[in-house]
Length: 178
Image (tube, rainbow, N blue to C red; front, side, top):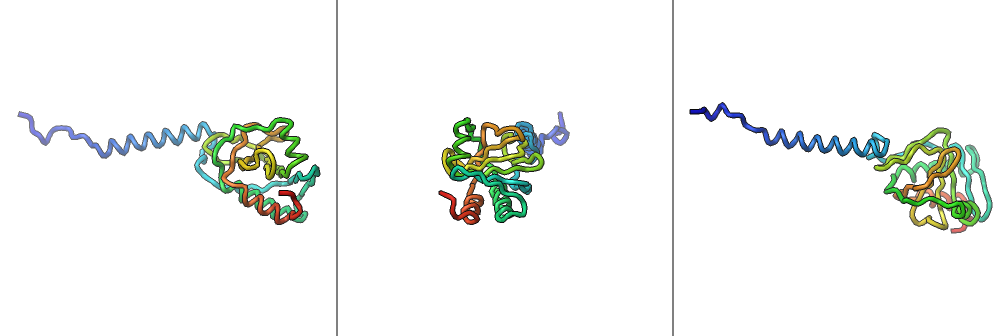
């Protein structure tokens, strides 16, 4: 007769830990590969723009480091981006919408001296410029249109909020139309 103490006993707890661990690693790697960002789950943004262009009322105002308002706006851009990204919007700007953002509405275009990364659960690329739509078409969606040196891209991500940037912009430039 077989001794009951000699039988193999399954380790259910260890098996569950192994399966859950495997699933967690597989999900993390899937997201990291698709987002092309191993820190896709993080929020935060530390880069500062090197120059900005404010479009309002058909005018174009370049804002450079050292000029009044640059430091406050640069910090507001950083704080806004540090809040995080919520989702891809599947919205791109047509040539007409882009011209309206430049000539009819309030928009802020910021430039970085190197590619930057917005952490998200989708690929945001490595933009060197961003266009924030403050008023006008699509502004209620909190979009940031990303771009490279040459062009703005489609599928602008929606940010959690544009409030830090909007509040600072209207404080620094109180004559802007809302």
